[in-house]
Structure formats: C-alpha cells, structure tokens
Amino acid sequence: MSGPPSTPLARQARLLKRILKLVRKERRLSQQEVADSMRMPLRTYQDFEAGGGALDLRKLRLFARATRSDPVALQLALFFKRPEVALYTLDSKLPMTFWIAFFELLTKVGPRLNVVPPGLVLSGMRRMTEEIDEYLIRHAASAESFLEKAWADIYDADDEEDGDVGDGAEDAAEDEEA
Image 1 (cartoon, helix red, strand yellow):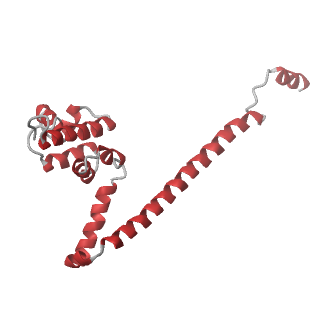
Image 2 (cartoon, helix red, strand yellow):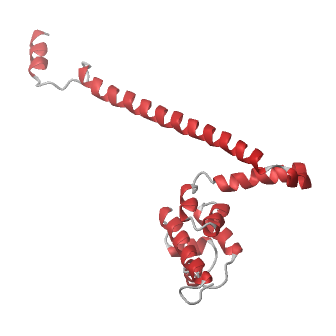
Image 3 (spheres, one colour):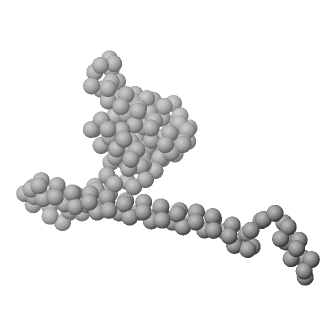
C-alpha cells in the first residue's frame, strides 16, 4: 500500500499504521498477541500494522476481532482520516451498530430507500444525538451522586461510635466503670 512518502497510498499507509497502533495500544496488546489472535505470523502482522501491502479488509476484520474493536469504525477512521473515530467507539461500537440498523432498514424498504430524503435521516440523527447527550448527562449525574453519597458515608463513619478511633482515654474510662 505504500509508495513515495507523498503519494496518496503512502499517506493512507501511514494513517492505517497510526489507527491500528492506537487501537492496539489502547487495548494494551502486544503485536505478538494480536498476531496470534489473528492467526498469522508476527512478521505478517507487523507488515500489516506498518501499512505494508494493499489494504486488506479481511485483515482489518481480523484485527477488529482480535482487539475487540469496531471494524466499521476502523474503515471510517481510515476513509475520513479521523483516527479518533476508531478510538472513541472502541467499546460502544456505534458505527457497527449504525450499520446493523441501516441493514435492517435496507432489508425492510429495499430500493425505496433511494427516495428517502437526507433531511429526514439527519433529523432522526439529531434526535438520537439529543437522546444520547441526555443519557450521558444522566449517567454522569448518577455516578457523581453515587460518589458524593459514598464519600459522605466514609466521612460520616468517623462520627459513628464503632468507627471512632479517638485517643483511647474514653475507652479506658468506660472499662474502669464496668
């Protein structure tokens, strides 16, 4: 996939290398672990990660499986030159989820999909964006609320009789009275 440093294929190879390395390191996997999971020799994997040879979508899918990443996100990151797409959707696998939903729609409406106005899809995506944003706000608030309560419980434990360490003088006085 490479060529002189300034050719489009050379730039694509460098971008692929960056994306694959970013995902592999985020998953804290060695090249050997990924190669083993992809069932290929280490040198073949290293050549793939370096962007050598033609772009091989089969290897990209094997890499996605080996790293538990999103194969659609890997392709989008490469196509749109946005490596963060692969990283930000590593666990949620949103692009693959979108593909599944799109394929369900394609199966249901078939060629009529061609007459769906892009504005309708954009409107639906914006509603989905709002719902996801609201979910993330609620999720963050519930985590913060949980932590605040947990911290308060820890701080309040000092006020409880069983948890009070004190200086020991009170305990000695109580023992003498008994």
